[in-house]
Image (cartoon, rainbow, N blue to C red; front, side, top):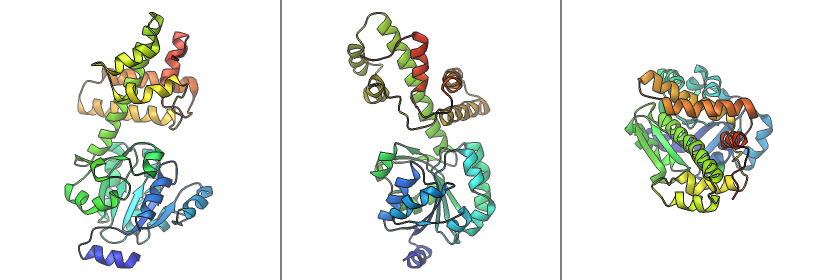
Length: 310
């Protein structure tokens, strides 16, 4: 099956059939299942050998190294925690091991500056590059509801769009522009979401202290000019005592720091962004590198001496 698809691809069919997937964590594992279900031959590598059973249960193969996974693959897909892991996983030997005319699709929440050098090294081996950082949860990955923020040449996206459509619907694939724009878009979304969470918590704590019923304030804010997806969709989890323990506070801080550094490099104002980073730095110092997307809110609750519970 793999060689037949590869021959079709060289004749003009862009759909890669042999995929090397690096990363079998919370997001990589359901993505592996989506690729296999779409009929692709998938070989997975992860630093944790205990992930092999879950990968094979999905119908994928397992490789003991990234180089072995990449050998002869038409597409290299990386789903690793962050920039440092991406650099560690992708020496030149990995790009050299791919099939001629292969593509590297990075679905990591990577740093634009870090990815720039990786993209250059991939290009030196004739490998096309697309960045497609994800928005969504592991459940969204499993059920093809992810949002992909794609950066890279439009013609490369056109060729490999069928591959991306194995993991999400066409309307959720957004081409943001050239290299770097996909990463920056994902980081900006994170910045605004975490900033909204902190600002909303401060407002709710003030309203609660002033004697306003939290449930009434929630409904009013949701229907007002100040309404947001965070208030309408995510705030009920906080009210139930759920700090969304699905992502590490250290990773959150690092990503927020990357986007503020990009603002500095590009010469745009970043006072608000700096504040969001400082709050999450304090939360990280206080709670440690544990999972919890709303732990900065927990820090604010502690400072106020009360919990946001209707």
